[in-house]
Length: 369
Ligand code: SAH
Ligand code: SF4
Image (cartoon, rainbow, N blue to C red; front, side, top):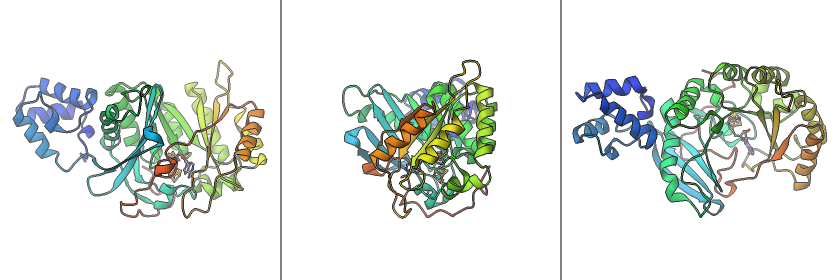
């Protein structure tokens, strides 16, 4: 189903142009608008004949993303966008600006079926998968808005990084995730290393990532170092417990020689004790990059972003430091992620589209595709 002009590949764009009785070079112009100019609106494609523009906009009216809401936070260095999807559901994308760098955090699904107990998106439930085009179009839309949003000197005017860390579980929607990753690389010209896919730990998805020629960065949301604790936070751990998850990550590292990030959201009194930190270090220290022998794991600690109704709370700064130092003592590289977007509910795990319809609660795995 075409839900965005970005759902069409080169062949389909050629067919579309031929159908309209236009010469083949018009398809190349259309691709230039979509991939280089990142402009999904046919009405703005000024070098196309008026008749073709009219035909395209008629045909694709009602597809694509509609910007519903834009909020700025962190003195203009963080922006959150609510995009309405054809059919009425909505997703959020977050732009994070840093001196010399601009990262967009995109969604792969409206809601999420994985049901992690601490995550707003997970608690909201799942409404639907996004198409390839809907994932790509988030990047296009944010890219074209970016130059006007720069808060000051030092901010760049183009996107440098894309992270699949918004709403949804990318490996529960693998076709759209990989389709989008390839389009961002081949069409938008982002290097594979500028793209990061974050997974809750779906082993089949990690195995596929090991086999894909496009070597994007992989992030694994681990959040606990023992199954009893992880089971309570991440229901999918019952299907792929920590040992199986780490075996798949080990195979991924062996196949790709790439480092892997491990996300760990620290929650007071739940997973922030030194026993978990010590275990985490012991689990991850043996992961090494073949050849160089350097550590293949990097731990990103995220102090929990408060999410109403979940009953979890952030740890004290001292607890974060203690945990970080205990992991570091094992030799595994570890950093604490700076919180962005908390004031506008744009931080990790806070995305939820209060204006969308309430999602179905689906048991983990039921929605895997
Ligand atoms: N579904 C994927 C992609 C989402 S990434 C995944 O889970 O990896 C969002 C990251 O933020 C994940 O690591 C997620 O576990 C984490 N997260 C969710 N809720 C959070 C919260 N309230 N505070 C901090 N991190 C949170
Ligand atoms: Fe889904 Fe990731 Fe949230 Fe879990 S943490 S519910 S997988 S978005």
